Length: 368
Image 1 (cartoon, rainbow, N blue to C red):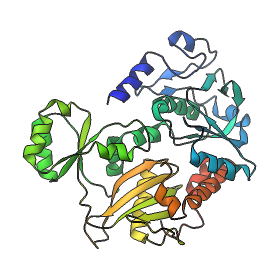
Image 2 (image 1 turned 180 degrees about the horizontal axis):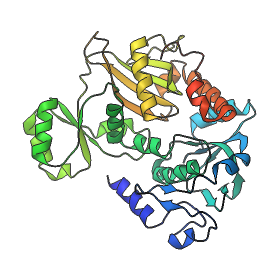
Image 3 (image 1 turned 180 degrees about the vertical axis):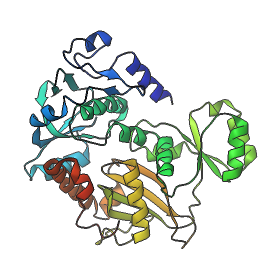
Image 4 (image 1 turned 45 degrees about the vertical axis):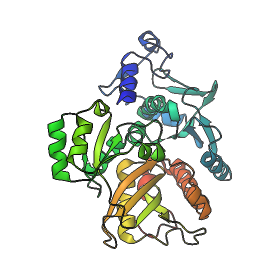
């Protein structure tokens, strides 16, 4: 996990987003009042108690800040237009352009030198700036500002391994995984899980890295091919193994808002799809909703498949946090459906705060 190691190392050296003044440890001591402290996991933790009530009085309930690297992100342009019609301003902030100051019972933020007081901050696709965004989101959330796609959610989104572990520990139907370097242990576990196995990277560079991850898949049909891999230099701790999905049954891509399905595409989608949930059964919707809720993404795209043709036993292959624009979704005429549901949810979240997470359902959610 080279990327995560660099991230934790930078945190330990004090190279954090600007709490006080950005820079090394000496910058941290320029803030008066409660000082930020380092958690064991390397994320920023601030003294929470004095901040929340004071912070909430200072926020703009009609403003959303999205941490994203690409200011021309198509989805965000659509969201900005939809939210604007509701009187809500959406600002895009490159994590590298966002400055944060924590001083006493107050947090201040600047986006490109302009002060911002958002009622909601959203983690988004940030590419090379993703790990920087993770540190900022943790500081912002700890200071009492409402956050969607938190530091933990983004970290899971960047790590196929952590996503798999989260699905397994939340009892979401998923394919078994193995992680380790010791050849005897890995081979012994693989014998119990079965073949074919596939090796995938522990970390990716961006949230929507489906093509990149699958492009790096290494398939092992039997113990001899896996043994050659785990005893070689290629398996130097940067991969984990998973039972390869059979790919013989039906496969679906389920798009979720607030963890409720709002659109679904079959493996071979139609050109136009009048009913966004026409291909989604209640059992499949239930599994997709469980997976989305476990990972925590807003929005999310859940890929599920039958373990064998016609079995209706659905398993999760992958969950993507903040999926990028999907050509198939647009061709089916469903992209606007997903974005419209996301805009309605964000408006409710601004109006009601975190309690909207439990109660908001899209009007089109027939299942889940």
